[in-house]
Image 1 (cartoon, rainbow, N blue to C red):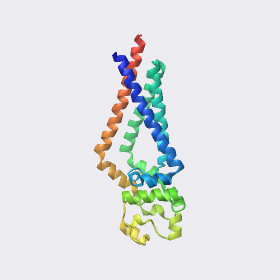
Image 2: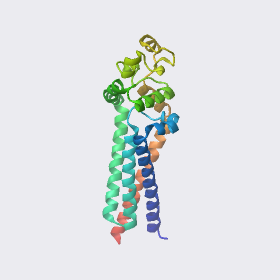
Image 3: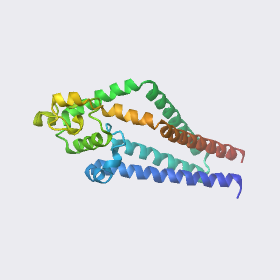
Image 4: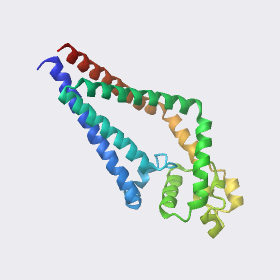
Length: 237
């Protein structure tokens, strides 16, 4: 087996793994969208480590679809030995690589901006649906219990929510599980918001997060190098 054939096979297998991984994420995302309750019953404790102030199901669907497309494109470009498809694969991975770097820079430099944007989006949802939407209420209860936090910023995120209007109290997590969790107790408990708590956890495990990010970046660079190698070799034929 020549070097060209070996690298071609490696690229096919690598992109096949990406394709299968993307299909798995897409399937999980659809599952969460269709039946979030059963998903949380199984993975509730684990899912608390994920930032659940965003809609995780749509995030998984988008990432899964992107990985599916990349894996399929990578397999086809190597199998068919098509320079056009190889260049397309290279371009897509390069765009994703640049976008990831840009997102990392924005996340590091504009953390306060991210908090402001999340507050503008999430707080109105909590005030409108917490206590009325069972799925959203359950997701937030699991998150606040496991992460030991309250709301996105603090207990006031739940003020005037359906739960607050009906019970005249806040979630128990906002008062360190003390009852009744009224305004005075919630204010004195000073439980941190989930955004600050999760950000603290990320900083605590910065080495692991950085290692994973570096590993993903290395794989993307390797994929681009292999694609360009195959492209150049085909050009010599």
